[in-house]
Image 1: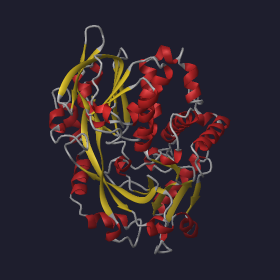
Image 2 (image 1 turned 90 degrees about the vertical axis):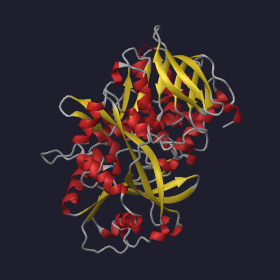
Image 3 (image 1 turned 180 degrees about the vertical axis):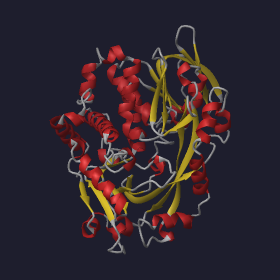
Length: 501
């Protein structure tokens, strides 16, 4: 992005201000500009480039989350049945994202889909009789839904060797294993996608982008508008910027900014920062033996985002394998944040929530301490549960992005840890914020449409409706209830995104 982005001065007033240059703000800016090209929109990003934090390629797993392989989206009920409601919801949300990206390609706003999305089978893999039985029940239940039709299941070692030769190498034939496979899974480089959208906004729209500009505070005005203190980090210049509508898409920094707004809806929220690490190999001999994203069960007391998985990654045309994530801990709320982020986030409004969440999640605290203390050799031992003869010299440790898990106040527990993604909006619909981590970027379009539904309901149901249906043809319909529509939408996005599965 051009150097001029660091030297321009923001105007004193905008219709819309978006804080953060990640996939959420880029998506929302693109949607709003399509709905109304006359809107004066500004994006403030504190770093020198879009998508340098959670959206960056190596700061997330690059999984196009469709619930094909993530076992935590399909819990087993006490009666032994499998609940797939959340899995269907996640799958539908990713289909919405794909439709929007297909629209951007059709309009010529972005090009070269293979730069950011590639077909990559999604698999679940489990070990032992009990988990194999669960996986079979899960497969049977999911196969009833049109969203998961085509899912294969096998316990046969020869079939598994076809699917995952690297994992099956040197396996004992008596070992009980089971796997499911969905060929229409994807690997997504959300960083590249975000920068493509950012380039379109910068070059072909009225949206103004300001890099190295950090919003430090948000205050309500008497007329219902918002006043922000914006710091130019290059020239150490500070100014006030006003806006009718503000969206906080600042990753881990969304929490303190939301708190500064003093809206009632933000009360009681706290944050718990969790970082991650991957073992990564670029050894092409290994890479050529593994062409899938393979998820298994989380260990006891592990948070959902710590489900072990061995993935093919395709970044800038280069293939690599990734294994993890291993949890880490830092008091920073962003990878390029401050060690004071966590202590400075504690206040009288969220202290009870924070303490309650900590007290009722002591096993998680123990788990994180154990993870942080692990050596590379100990991490390699976990990898060898997947790849029997993994060699330490083939793998390097790479630090992933920093996530802030939501802590919400709870009448019974004081506070509880939430592992999802949540949109917080004030009652007037003039300020919105995205909090949380998973499934994150995959559901960006759904999340930003939720923001628009809550903040611009009359326009969305009125003058913006036709444009919305052009961008997302399935909007307002449950794909799980419409097999023909599902087939039509998937055929359309497969063609536009040039997906080869």
